[in-house]
Image: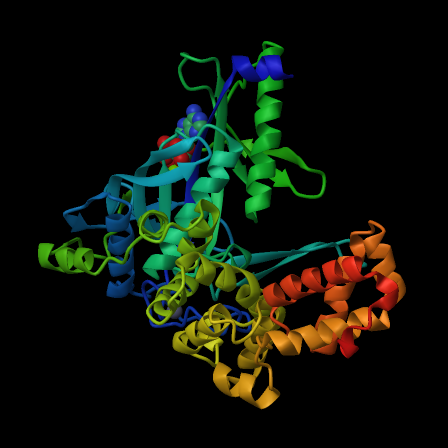
Length: 500
Ligand code: ADP
Ligand code: MG
Ligand code: ZN
């Protein structure tokens, strides 16, 4: 198998469909809200009834332009649409309005940090189009007749198609690219980009060839409904095509195949259609219009920092670990909270990152909450971490304080005060606790002195339990060690810690 891997190259190009985050649909005022009762967000225009007249939603154009700018595209000088004809019940007009002759953006790129280093992946084009409705296929009923249900709520939602050049070279690269693209779209706030709600979807094209040869015939994969499915489907298809090539039976024609999640295979659907099949022509009901330079410049000025830039800044300015910088840069709200916390925190940035990605994320996942739901401020969060650094509380107690802040929104100082959670940092108080423990466990002390190192952790645990986790850990370690040494020198039998 590895021999054939060396002899073939895989080439992947992606077509990503992204629902743009507008309140109203592309040509009418109907709501785009996800999850409504079927066919409640429809009107003659988005149902494609005769006489319905489309009026372009400016916001959709703005979101498409913003995406084009962030993806370094050459933007079209004017905006125009075309009709793409095909028949399917989810498209009652019999044609989809899209941009064929003049996509709103072309020749862009997105820089992605792959396992073997950063690289710009070229974007062939981005174009604006309309969503079709949604079809639900029902299994055959008792009479043996299968049926399909149609929901037109989705029909006419603005869709941006982002097409990459064929230059991703492995299923893993395809997944990493898509994760980065999704993060960019979320950061731009142009789309919810939720794969599970269908607002971020991908068809993947894959071909194989021998190095130096021209591009091979490709297969277009459909029904890839998760990042895992995309990678698994491509891995399967790569193996299938390599095996065919190895047998001297390269693909005869380009085809569309569907990923079968359950069986873990791709299944032939149809031959790939050609552009001529669609009878494209300019859409006569939406006049072309010029995209004014001032508008575009204003959008450019307002572009946020994209995840890659943020990641680099976090590594370079804050010296964050690579993996943490990557995680934070892809979560906009967490990243903003991280930076806000740093304004008030006296310690290192990595500590803040650890707490946000660790304990705070755990609490949010557990309760299905987001940063926006937090009942405390970044300033309170910083105060908590400062208390920990100043050894007012141990890190273990700090987690308990955070849980309480998370639940009630109370300030950390008040929680620590009310609960009496301050750390015991007075050496004589800690010494007293240690001596109690040693006196009460003389056989364990003998075990320890006899070489059983594990007993040490037992003593630590016992003191912590008695102090309700408040004993300062370093101090406890130090004093415990000293007291045990004393036991060794005086002989355990005479050790009566509390009487010294
Ligand atoms: P069409 O619109 O006819 O499907 P495009 O040229 O727009 O074709 O390409 C669609 C997608 O397929 C793009 O992402 C492109 O990178 C990819 N692609 C095209 N040719 C190949 C190939 N030989 N191998 C892999 N991917 C390809
Ligand atoms: Mg295409
Ligand atoms: Zn409508």
